[in-house]
Image (tube, one colour):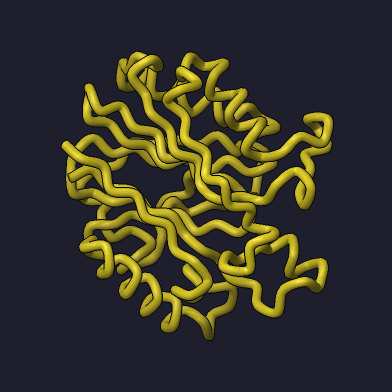
Length: 222
């Protein structure tokens, strides 16, 4: 079983509609991006985030019937992380500055895509993502591999609750605390706030970007 990981860039255009008039264009962007990686949108589930409430560690295992949710139909799920246990079911997460953690247990054939932004990390979302897999799926954290997406660096997006450290640093620390081996964690070297090839919401708010879009990560077991 192999693992497909892909990350879009600004050249692929925005992967999330920030207003109703962008929905058609974004659907076209997603379709083109996924097709370029031989992934069907109908076999893909959106990890749909919401910032209402006070729980940012909401995880769920998906079923085949969840394919297409948020991609070819309206989102019915609100998640901070989604899990699949069968090949051919892709997970899709739009990002601005936060980390998308692709967590894979190749021994059990389990894939999780977890959103690790400020809200999640302040609730120890990196650790809780692994703890969820241990409790619900019986994984051994020593078997897990993790890929961390491009994200804003501490120079551009310091986490005040963690002594101004960066998203990648704090996420890595939390994953290791849950038992993931350091050598099994791969961190993207891309600083989304500094690299104009990626969207950055924080830089848009500061007036340093013309467009406020989202890039995306997608992962699927084959």
